[in-house]
Amino acid sequence: MGRHAAHWQPLIESGQMAVFGPVLDETGSWGLGVVVADDESKLRAFAASDPAVTTGVAEIELGRMLGGFLRARERSFAGVE
Image 1 (cartoon, rainbow, N blue to C red):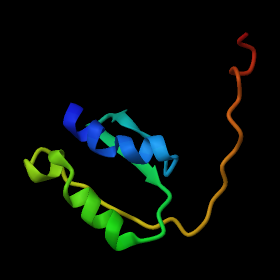
Image 2: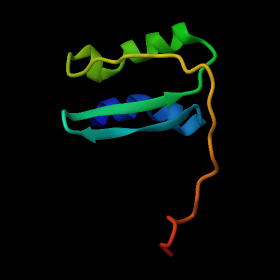
Image 3: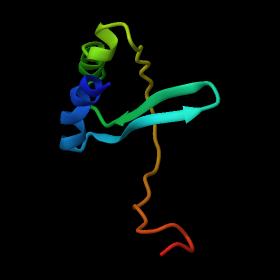
Image 4: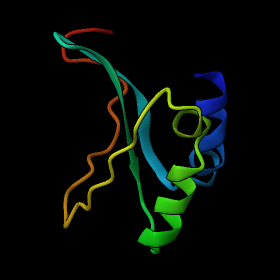
């Protein structure tokens, strides 16, 4: 998973990755990444070259978000200082 995270690090550093990390639910764990990209085919090729994919450890599913909103990050949770 370290090589997997390192593969995506350039997108995180460039600001193209809006969110990236593990998700835990009742079925186990999986990851979520939201990338802002102009070229879907380049993103698909990049995802296919992820070490987690090439070694058979994981599969990546890509979807397209047609629109959305991003709120400003809050400094604290309500009621927590």
